[in-house]
Length: 91
Image (cartoon, rainbow, N blue to C red; front, side):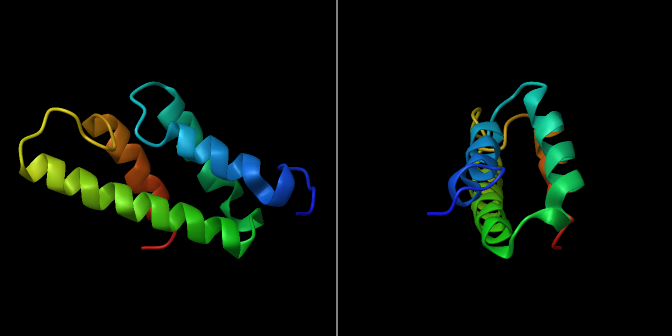
């Protein structure tokens, strides 16, 4: 693995994103802003992981909402709205 400004093979980008996904705090909006601001600078391999992880989370979140579950993979509506902003990068 190569070292770069974001850790080994951009590991810190992926780790930070995955930490924030599903949280229900201010970190979601901060992370969404960070992803949006830096998206064009990141390699396609990182973007692919983020896209796949986020699309899977949306799928699980949609199912949880349809089933009326209290706990939702994307958090509260305000959190989901932030991830929708990120999702617009490729939709």
